[in-house]
Length: 89
Image (cartoon, rainbow, N blue to C red; front, side):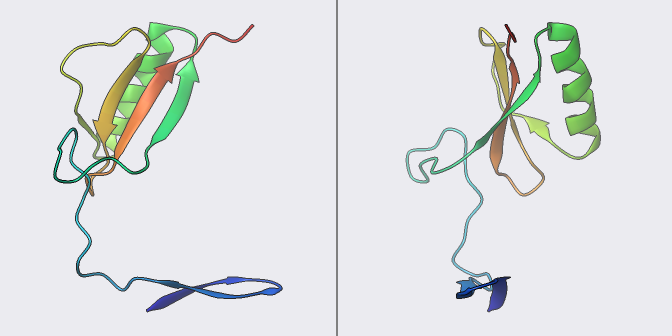
């Protein structure tokens, strides 16, 4: 097992693999437990720039169509994340 160290706390134990499965989107047999939402800026143009960067790094789209203000992707390991268009007041 790998260990993460934190000053003043005992080391955390991380699983060494095996038994872990990439998240599916959406799949009832592997429910989503955690995902990240990334603020790509207030405009669709900024979201498209962020999307191009994510795709160049190996992300793949999971969205069937554009939502009101976000798009869903998976990283190369299959973990879901969203790029969001968020207005900043």
